[in-house]
Length: 242
Image (tube, rainbow, N blue to C red; front, side, top):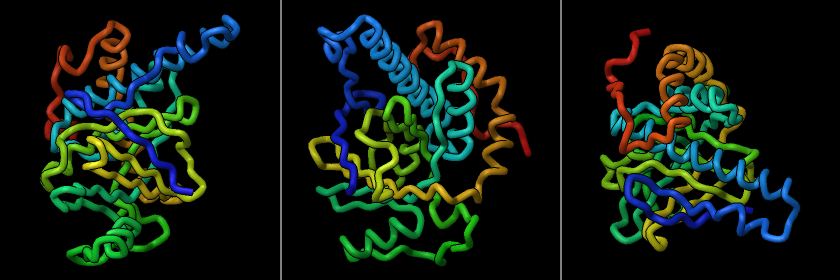
């Protein structure tokens, strides 16, 4: 079964609405209500973090490095998240514009749209990140997905925004997660490639390099900062050289 989520558009990002925990757990035990409130708070923090990283990186943001910064910051907040390698197919259903990375997305685009991936075929070796081409974040505990670098596809005239919001299952049996937004005009399909470890070394290196920035982001998040009020800048091209 393919999991489909419907997101709402909000300025500065694509965030599905987090329903207040007091509504979800009305009439339940105080403990259950408190746990729900804590999950809601964590979800909002991570959605804000998604916007912050998107602002720091802009359209230059590399997905692996952004994911590493996201995980490092979430660890400082005490919230477990998972970096996930994916192939992505993004479609503007009105203008018939398509952006894609990886083998699975290319095959699906050809099946649905008759589109063909241009350029040399990706390396299909077992550990090759190139067979997928993108990295996002999920939280199994919160059932939330985060894509802080979706704006990189704005070069294909797709919305220059991050994606963040709850889904019914972050590990669908089909391996596919479809997100629709703007009343179905845009459709994003993520094809999970969880056995792909081709980028693990780069991810761990980037996570260590972004340690100081992660600490600053966690502090600002705890202080109530948002992407709009972020008080420091780290241009992506000025990151430490490897």
